[in-house]
Amino acid sequence: MELIDGKNLAKEIRENLKVKCEELKTKGINPKLAVIMVGDDKSSQIYVRNKSKACNEIGIEFEEFLLKENTKQEELINLINKLNNDKTINGILLQSPIPKHLDINEAFRTIAPEKDVDGFNPVNVGKLCLNQDTFVSCTPYGIMKMFEKYNIDLEGKSVVIIGRSNIVGKPLIQCCLNKNATVTVCHSKTRDLKEYTKRADILIVAIGKSKFVTEDMVKQDSVVIDVGINRGEDGKLTGDVDFDNVSKKASFITPVPGGVGPMTIAMLMNNVIKASSDK
Image (cartoon, rainbow, N blue to C red; front, side, top):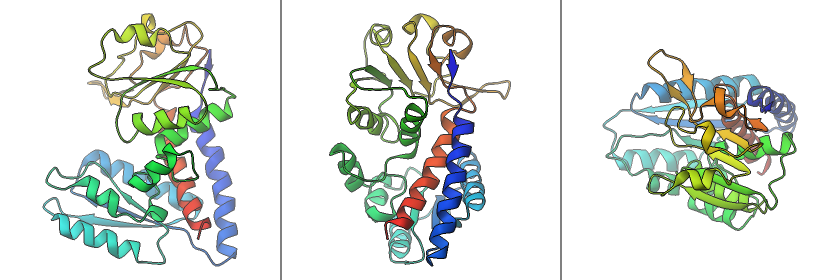
């Protein structure tokens, strides 16, 4: 069993981005990310802090826009349009979740495709489906980079994804298809889930249920990617996979923490540098 070290790979990517950022600055381009946060969700505050830290390390300028919980849809859209028109800003990110009374899809549609560093604008989602150059959602992008780094070839392989969210599951389907994998997507309505997971050469789990995937659900020598981050009652972080037991059967596996998580932020930074370079 080989551990896929996302922490180390993310560090390597950030160091390369630091060099690229310096190069852009010598050309008079100052990469800048604008992050919008609505309300005071505690987890979101931690994520935003981590993004700010990563920007700081690479040399990307970071500006945060905090909106109150009771912000109206019109105010949010107006702010996005203002940032779209601000030539000093290269990337715009709307931190989710946002309060339920707001329409997040309209907000994603409003973010200019060329500044959409999260890859959620329908234009960029469509480009991904057509296998065109675009911004890819950061978590799936990070997973693809892991496959690349560890020479895990997807061509002809059976990839099973558990989870169909717009943020992870759906973009991942396309990323894997673009690498000529045979992709199966399972979700809460799937019957006989184990029958699918046991056939997977590569199993990607993104459902948010602690230790949901057990040893008897995976094939010998399969590759297991755990996207889940769950906090137990003891305060410890666990993934969606029962790591201790599943790792006995896997050929490659990601740990939690230190697997997919650090890669998500690294790929966001990568997208900001790309947005700045594409100008």
